[in-house]
Structures are given as structure tokens and as C-alpha cells.
Image (cartoon, rainbow, N blue to C red; front, side, top):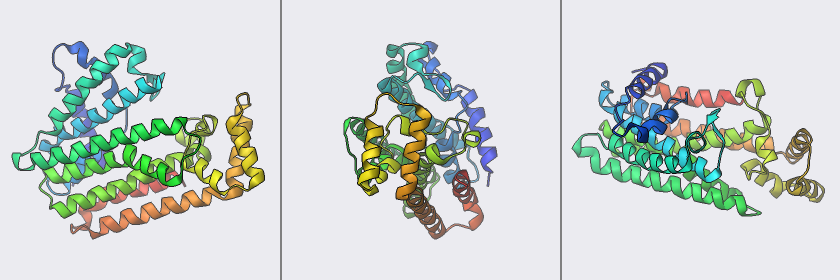
Length: 324
């Protein structure tokens, strides 16, 4: 079995080959730009881990894994255009560095390139691999649509929010694991179990991000705390606070949500205090723990030697360690 560090190194070397680049190179320059921004590459890493669980030779999985990373970056590129975002991972977004037309066309090229790479597998697995990834790709689009709709709605329920992040975030992580195991020849019940495992860690990842944006440490995260509060982002935390607050806390919370002119640190402090009073931190920690436990249970039921599953157990521990 390869270690996480070894797989990450192999992915970076494969990306640096730029083997997906065609003429005109200017069409692919924005794709290269996004792939070389130092992202953690968790999605292609999951695909390689799953592949390696069933095959020692991962050479055939490298290009499909890179395809998944290209697909992920394609979705981010178009998200940035829709949001008119200035920065992505600390660098100018593609439509700001070039222009919107470049971002749209290079995004289209990225989607096509991603599928060309993802489909490079043995013929016996191709139909199932493409069908499954089509489902993932459509779910990501559905999640993005729900997310955009939520921005203009006054209220969102917790079930609606959980469904949105399931589609927008969790299914792609899950799909990476399923894809890697599928093209390595894993039994269907096992690559579907890995998909379910991926859904759990995807939900854990996003809900933990919500939590850390309010209760995380600036030095550890490398970014300011409270951005979601300042933007009135309808996270699980805000939705729960609105559900559970008594009349006085609810009145104060709605005042901060509607207020246009405010001191940022004062708003963060006040809203965080409301979260504390209604018990939001405990509620979020409980749901995070439930996703951790479920992921461990699913992984334990997969009929492989325990050493084959160690990288995935390590990822669970890494996610748990982020909030401690």
C-alpha cells in the first residue's frame, strides 16, 4: 500500500506533466493555472487510495484521478464566475486574471478534458464508470442550484441544507472513492460501500468547515474567523440557531442578520454568543460525531485486510483532529 504522502507526490508529478494540454495552449492555460495553485487534491487522492485497496499497480489510475481533479476545478471555475469571486485559494480567479469569456470557454474545455481522462479505464468497467460519474456530476449541479436558491430565500430548513451539501460537496468525494475502486475491479457491493463512506466524510468535512468558521483557531486555519456570520450565510449553525432561539435571542439574531451597517467584530461576537446560549456547538459536535461513527462502521464492514483500509482510517482521524 502507498502512503497518503506517496500518492500525493505521484499526483503532483502527473499534473506537472501537463499531458492533457492540446493546441491552442491558451485554451488550457487557465486549467494549468488552477491545477498548480497548491490545493490539497483530496479528491484524486481518494480515488487513488480506493484503487490501491484493490490493486498494487496504480499507474492506470493516475490519469483518471487527474481527470477528477480537473472536473473539480472546472466546477470551481464556473462557481467563481457565478459568484463574481475575486480570489480562489489566495490567487486571482480565472475570470479576474483573464476575463469571463476565457473562464467560460476554458471551463468547457476542462469539463471535456476531465471526461476524457476519467474514461481511461478497461472496457469492462467503462460503462459503469461513466454512468456513475454522470450521476455525480449532475448531483453537483443540483447542489449548486440549491445553494444559489438559498441565497435569496429568507429561511432554509436543516434538512434542506443537509441535502444541499450532500449534493454539492459529499457526492463528489464519494464518487472519487467509488470510481477508484470500480476501475480497479472491486466487487459492486464494496465500491458502493466506499461511496457511502465518502458521503459520510463529505458531510463531516462540510459541517466541520461551518463549525470551524465560527469556533476554529485563526493560526490553525490560516484565515479569519466569522466570515459566514458576516455574510449571513445559511449554514447549519445559523439555521439551528434560528430554530432553537427563544424570542429574545431570535429578535437579536434577526436584527444582526438584517443590519447593513455594523462593526464586524461586534457582530461576530454577538452572533457567536447566541449560538453558545442555544447550544449550537454541542449540536454540531454531535452530528459530526455521528458521521464519524457511521464512516468507521461502513469501513469496518468492507471485507479487506485492515492494512488496506488504513489510509481511509487516517483521513477520518485527520478530519477529527481539525476541530480539537
